[in-house]
Length: 227
Image 1 (cartoon, rainbow, N blue to C red):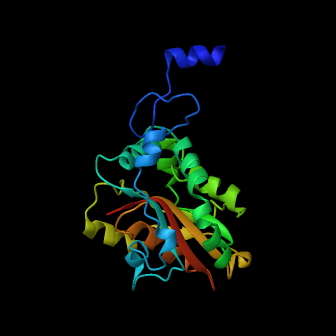
Image 2: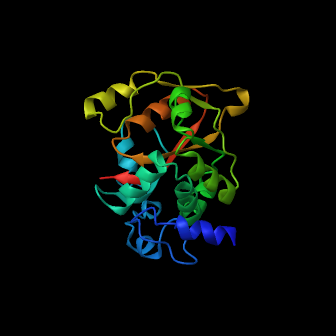
């Protein structure tokens, strides 16, 4: 009864198109689910996302689930996930797409899932890391530990959204990320997760930090790929 009253005065809307959610729909409406552009990167070994890392850092595989287009459904989802506190978007997408990773994860013997970290100052300001719900959903379904303490962000910087290509490239050389590891982390295969792959500079910087650990392998998974 109480929940029905809450829904009456504060109706739930789709995080993609803001239309009212119907009974049985959760976070994303059925229409948006059908219209969301999927990449199918998991079916192509050297896909467009994988090629972002050519000659930069070695990666075993790279998979982005959705295409990010300006003013598109995915942009609305990412905006709501990142700035509007709608963490359940990450959970829903992880719940939806984890089967796409199951074969790759098993074939490549992935050991742990590692999120791209926020600086503690930004984490306090935002209240959450937008990657957490997504990464934990994958962790639960794929039965792989979620390790949010391994990779750390040492320096605070402005959001990457409006930075140009030159500034993003400088990020790679800035040692903004580091790792707190022990011998138990040697020889592991880490699955690095983030929200959007654009130029790849942030993920490359994270990968370089992880490569300080002896004998590691790295793969990358993101919610979306920006063309």
